[in-house]
Length: 54
Image 1 (cartoon, one colour):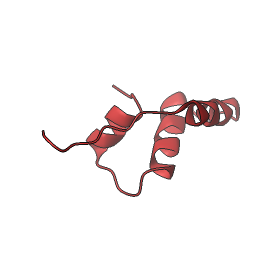
Image 2 (cartoon, rainbow, N blue to C red; image 1 turned 45 degrees about the vertical axis):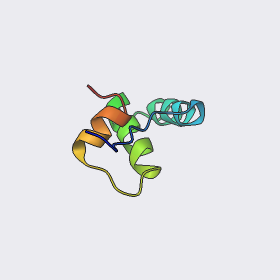
Image 3 (spheres, rainbow, N blue to C red; image 1 turned 30 degrees about the vertical axis):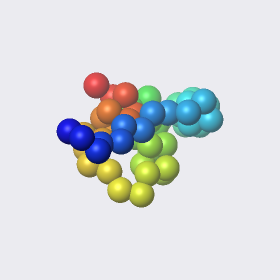
Image 4 (cartoon, rainbow, N blue to C red; image 1 turned 180 degrees about the vertical axis):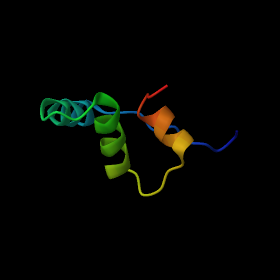
């Protein structure tokens, strides 16, 4: 749809995801937490696309 902004992970967010994975969080949970930590409001679809969970 027009006007949608798709957010992608930066290098720093990837590093933070790796750190969370290192302390025994699953990769999907780590990606979701990092994405939500940097996004004020998101739908489940935004999370899936932005955190590359699909």
